[in-house]
Length: 521
Image 1 (cartoon, rainbow, N blue to C red):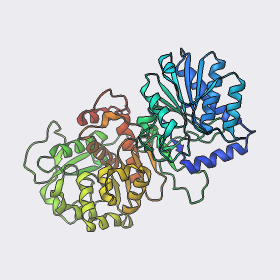
Image 2: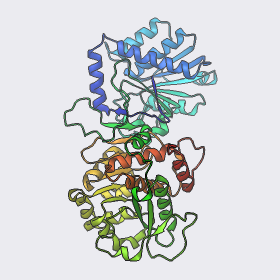
Image 3: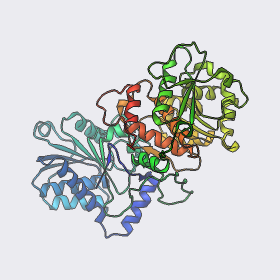
Image 4: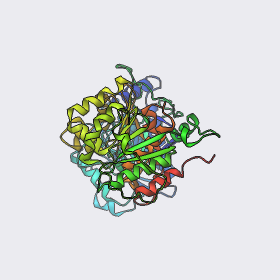
């Protein structure tokens, strides 16, 4: 059994519903009947015993399918260890001959009393140390209703913790979105046989609590060391190939291994970054991006401030102004990594076409993305960069992503974050970091990754500017690195630096936390 969140160090393959079903069928074919459901229930009971060693009373909520069967076996195993187990089975009877029917028969034969329907007030008034959610499983596509929905509400309103089997009931396994108003609010989730992407993005983290994985001794998913190059997208009909990767924090160490700073390094070898943005009233965004590029290790960082009012930069004397004559030179934007859009507003527009045409490495954020979304010519220019040998990394939040894809709003992006990130990457032929809970990194023709690091501490103004600047600073030092590698390293580093922060993390403090993760040489 493996702990996957709060943060994993290694990479793990993620399998959507179709791929998980294929893995399940292959595993069932290779084992005697009922072997896997027994292992699933036993694994659930082991985790319950490990997490609540002093627990003595559990309410098992079992639905009609195999997820309910897992819960019944877990209850049987806990009863054998001396726990008081009360089973409430909700929904129609399991199909004759199924694993779920087998689990129900074994539970009754073991002496468990299986109650049909919801727990009553007498049950709720008694001692409950744990709820086990085995109501709905992998294949659920409709909002919970009737007794299932009522059971979810009862468990959510009770103070005892909840352990969800495979995924919280009412959560979409592929997208991480709630199927309806009722979703199990789990303290822990044990995902079985395969790891589902919906647990790690969208609302998945909020509902899943700490996430654990058990492959039921079938080796369906194995942790791997991060690779320096992204894995190609699985071909159509590729069976149970992983549909995405859960990216671990080892990507930070991997970056240092592949892009070390030599003993004779100097600033001229660490690359230049130009931050284009910071219109009046929005100077802070450009300052944060530029400071982050410095913190990441770029040799020189310049500020190309829109409508420069001559005000000094706060606190960072290392930052330099981009000379006025460089703005209008034919190839003025070619010699550095350009981080464009942080606090730019509409004042960015006169310069954006030249940047899209010239910049060899471009990190496009915030107002740069909004202007591309609003001007078809700029969108075409951005999409054409890759064919011209130029490299782009886009860092939208969901609203910016909706504008770029011409969706009606954020809900359309959040409904399928993996699909939206890939659509952006394909449309603009660029690497894309779709920010948010479980940030996604997608590139054309590559398998997407979901970042395992990060927390709600990042939900403060300016942290996105820090991410864009940090990516620019990394890229300046490794100009041959792919935008996918740069973006994934930056987003994992960004999240890992905030993972254990107790409260909201101010963006300027985030930069210092990220600097602290540099290895000591």
